[in-house]
Image 1 (tube, helix red, strand yellow):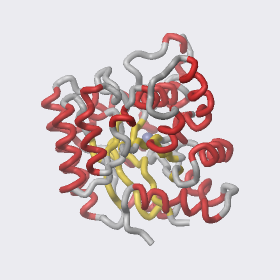
Image 2 (image 1 turned 90 degrees about the horizontal axis):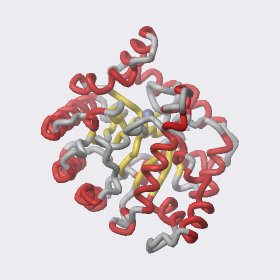
Image 3 (image 1 turned 60 degrees about the vertical axis):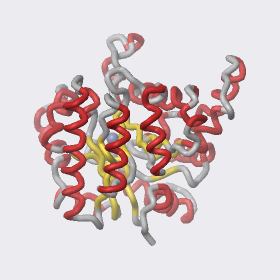
Image 4 (image 1 turned 180 degrees about the vertical axis):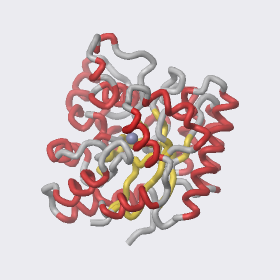
Length: 318
Ligand code: ZN
């Protein structure tokens, strides 16, 4: 089954300084292997994609990128530099690569302008945001210009996990619960719910948020979100679950397991679930084999593997 993959990472030379600290605990041989694949746009990456049946990958910066840069002007400049770098790599293999913009949210108006440039001039398919930006979350009113632009362009925004401002006290000494094990799901699911409960999708009803990891547990929680929103007198135009169904779509990145896929399909519908691998942090071949073999009807498999992505990202693929 051919596939489009949306959460596939790369690293540009100017962003290495932000990424390196996140890998401090990783043994050097593993770090070197990941870095070699992150910075490769040729044989290493294409061979793995080909083996897994991935025809097209939407490339996005490995986080956190400029979102941790305290100097807003430097962040804005370096984000544009990374986007130009990616556009040049895509131009070498346009049949295999497309891009998500890297955005410095430190200056929301400049962020909107860069999203516009990336979509209209560079042909990117939306943006990938790596969690909070210096403690600020996407529901804040200061980001309305960014959402207005995303809605105007019909550009989906992929919210990728990153660390919270501070590690959760409740994790205590259990450092292994941070990040991908559990912490990133809590942080990213919370970030998405801040947008739902903060009325972002009342203000921008056509905005579309993409979440990896099958929606960071949200598909499992819909009934409870609606039930508790009534208890607490939440004032939104619609029920929380309506926004999750209509303004959020999810990918299977890093969740190669049948039960959560079934839950997501049942909760969101088969038009809202898409394939992804999470290169180079997960095994592309495991992702591809899972997609090819997981029990489901062939129509749904084609929807998840590539049709939904082609429709949502406006990619011409037959
Ligand atoms: Zn990822």
